[in-house]
Image 1 (tube, rainbow, N blue to C red):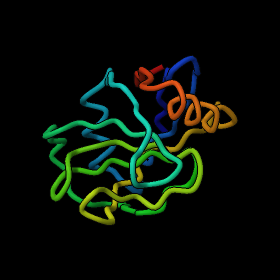
Image 2: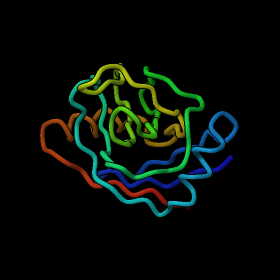
Image 3: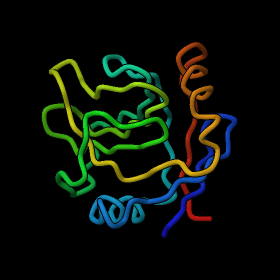
Image 4: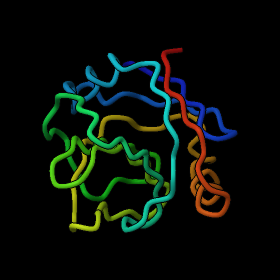
Length: 137
């Protein structure tokens, strides 16, 4: 089991990579570490924050993909009809963009600090973009 340290806004989280269910996505993300971005609140998907990544190509297709991540689950949309992005659900999410429903690869699950994910999402909604950093412990 591979864990990542995640600093999201003021919160310290630990996430477990879903290496058995999304091995290609996890391997590609590990190669990108440390991964630094900013989270903004989603526009169409509900209670989630996302990292818009433009045309960044992780070199993966769909695996373990869903349109309905649970709170604390992160999905990577590898691009296609919308830009590449990573989404973290903090409540009810129906993953979508201006072109309609999307599906992303569930590749990471928050295992420590999950109790702070809702507050992180609401902070991002009301106070704006928050920094996020992923790294190996």
